Length: 406
Image (cartoon, rainbow, N blue to C red; front, side, top):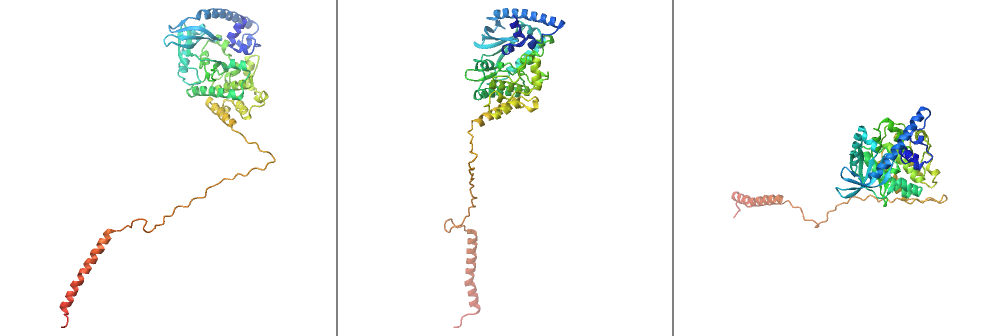
């Protein structure tokens, strides 16, 4: 029973770090009166866990809002349970995330839930899990999503240990594409981690669970301590300090995921959330080359830049990080030339075409028809005729006055 309670407080962190005590997950280990209050909360959580498990068994076959029939549960956590379901109206299979029953009793939670679900439903991208519908059935919020074949990236990482650069970078480029699209739409994920990245058999990655963390910020303070540290290994420094997350916060979390899938370990590990928060805020990560000596230097510099403490020192959006990773992939595929130190450098000659002279047009006789001004010719002929016609007249006048001698 204690393990199930720890799972409620810590989501899936108990699987990753079995050494975590309950105080590491839900801030419940204290001293004196605080200890007794925390122990009481632990017993109440245990009782709630029994109730939830009983309800889960009853949920299978349940019809949500008279439309969605729950078929089988294939995922669960401290926040929600995921079912494979059938949409009886459109006759298709979907995935439905049913949030814990106690969350629907909070009006602020319901209002924020509907706002975030509506915003997530407007995201349409190949690398984002599509949200079809959302609603509240008998006070229990649920989200209807596309049913993605495959498994989450964290499960794949547990099986493989780590990914090679050739296999890991394409997955992270896809994650950047999906998150970058959300950033352009004005949405910040706030909970980027490999558990929220689904990978299909054909290596298509889809990001899910947009806005869920912001919804949890509306819960009452008494419940907030149970889940505020759901994924402390992936939080950005500003989130660890309690500040408002930004797209650069998602970029930092993408850097943590990239570090993890390439090295097989997290950049920061600790026995308590407080220790992890301190490391995110102050400690420098171990360079990835300490774990994988053959990692390209350019890739290591990209990862360390993304893990910078100051948001302004990182890439501002996931789109920028995605373009850098794509550029790294294309440049790395190009062959490089290694020269012998004793070899003489080969001179490089650049051939430049001499400037071509402008063509000169030389007229050739008879090649083109003559350009004759016929008006001038006509005037000339008229003048010639006029002058030639006066010659006989002046000869007549001359002979009148000077007749020839007979």
